[in-house]
Amino acid sequence: MNHSNRLIKNILSNYAGVLIPSAILLFLTPFMIKKLGVAAYGIWIVANSLKSYFQVMELGIRTSVIKFISQYHAADEKKKIEELLSTSFYVFLLIGIISLFALKIIANFSPDIFKIPPDFSQTIKTIIGIFGINVAIVFLNRILEGALVGLQRYDLISLLNILSEALNAVLTVLLLLSGFGIISLALLSLFVSVSVFFIQLTILKAYYGFGIKLSRFRWQTIKSILDFSFFSFILEIASKVTAKMDSLIIGIFMPVAAITNYIIGVKLASIAEKLTDPMVDIFFPFSSELSANRDREGLQRLLIEGTRSSALIAFPLVAFLFLSDRAAVALWVGKEYHKSVIILDIFLMISVFTTLEATASRILLGIGKLRFTAAVSIISTLVNLFLSLILIKSLGLKGVALGTLIPLSISSLFLVIPYTCAMINLSVKELIKRSLIPPLIPIVPVFFFLIFLNNLLGLEGINKLFVNAAGIFPFYFIIFFKFCLSGEERGFYADMLRDFLKGKRIFRFFSGEGF
Image (cartoon, rainbow, N blue to C red; front, side, top):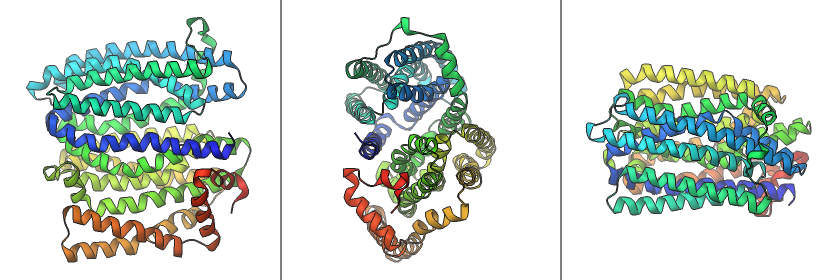
């Protein structure tokens, strides 16, 4: 398969693997809240947050596995791949066992750590204990999935992700309708993880002949892995801590039921990131290729077009959700969760900064600037923690959300994006001119017109959602296409739209041919 077809296939596979499970979760969440109740669902979120925290013990090894397997596969070095897989597998097996016992200890003290209703004390102990076993399996799954990423089999990864999420959703509904509770859901999660493990192991053996063998374990391989993985590990720590820190802080300082209101807003706001991540994730290995070829113009073009594409997706979606915040929350989970509206609004602002920064951060990874990215992530996470701990006392849930917004906006606008521009010899002014202003221009008139229309007609509920959607999306893109692009650019986007599924344009454009 040529480069362009492979790039398009990977992007489409990534989108399918992210959007379909996200859609499943979107419909599953209100059902779970209704069936479990606010307190039980909050406990479920706390337990999942602990589970995610322990996954930082990957130590950046998965990133190393992806890098080295990609190299070895290109050189057709099967023996080295098996040595890498086997060594990483047994290292992760040890880490998983340690995590299992650590979570068992935490489980015993969890009712005292979090504000858990007395009726749920034994429940959370049991769930965290089950998750301890699950974490051990997930570690092994991550190594096997990393191997598939290194082999660039995003199609298989996405298919497996879709099937596992669909199975989990169907069985979750059946269990809750049958009167079972969150302990049964924890056991279901373990069952799905074990199933995924055996399927991935079978794929690697059947498609590529790779197996896990103790005889292939090599101490020297561990050294090679760790030499590369240190700063990747720092990044993973910052990412995991930032993603789950808010829920744990709320669980410690507020009633556990408050987590539900918070998570509803976070999940709705994350739609913009979920729509851009499958595209920008492909830019990481792509920018590595451009860097290896010393193609600075290609990197500049990637940053400009990648940032503009992210903004084109994020701006209208964020505007729609901001205008429809109360109606969106009420329609999704019910009017009683109105406290989630302010959290949604704050996290919509956060999603703007994260999507604008996304291409820049992938390029920094691709060109090997892990040290800078890791330093920024750690500082941002520490400031986030400090502000959240301070602001939760006076502002409650809103304070925790603001504690996330403030450092993230500063790091994105004043550190990551300018530093990336400096690394590839692109002025920040040029990036703003070509990537941010064109997508911003059409949103302003549409946004303020819809505010006027909503107030004039007194729209609420589904009517408000429909009018805002009909007013924002078509008119935004019409104005952008007609007035914010040059004739040359309009021709490019029109051709790209026609040729997208054939894979003819994107790779050729970013690799240096331009319009």
